[in-house]
Image (cartoon, rainbow, N blue to C red; front, side):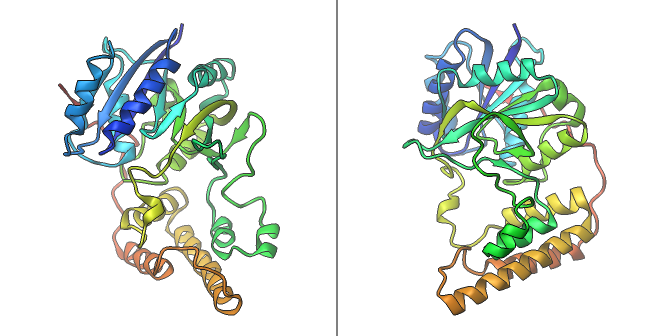
Length: 329
């Protein structure tokens, strides 16, 4: 029976994380699986609250990240922790703290990867608590997708329909470029080959980068329609309440393009986004369209990327830099 490690990352949402852990434990019944909860240096009593809850869950570990390095870094702590006997699992399953898998959701991902050796990663169909589908399957971003997404203009979208990042909602299991990390299972051997999350990303684009590295190494990412997970979304990040685009989103976007396609492509992507954004703002002015971005978004992005372009290139490093072992208490 394959061994599975589930990693559940918490940042200042202990009660929600407890709900997610309870759902995960039900979904893991009958499997050779362990659950590790990582508190990402919440500093609000989350760690102690989770420790207290875990007393009722035999075998569940609660560990501290020691620092808040973001989504990828926090999940890396849990992945590096491995199984309780010190060995590595065959698969790693990432579950968001505001995501609740159906009883068969995790098993279906595992069975899919077991029967599809070409797939390195597999993710679930995500829906809201009321059943509304969430778009979580995507194409890799490109220069053309930046124009299409920013312009929000029918003729441009039709001309570039094969470049748009969000995929039409899949009706069946299929290969995709990348998946959101709310419910994502990964083959440990693939992680051993390509490395863990790039911890330069604090939040956003880290799953995109990881799936791109897997694709370049010859591994597919599959969307498994039958694996269903309820998801609230943006509980830790507050994305739905942004009044200004945060610097870490801009940092992540620039890092993704410049790392994977070079600085020239990153500049071109920003230019195309700016062009599309200006077109949208012209339509706002002439047609009374409502704002679709946080205030000052376009200006913030362009100024950020000009400053990033002026910085010296970062030194090259291995994809997975070992850090001090997580403190287990």
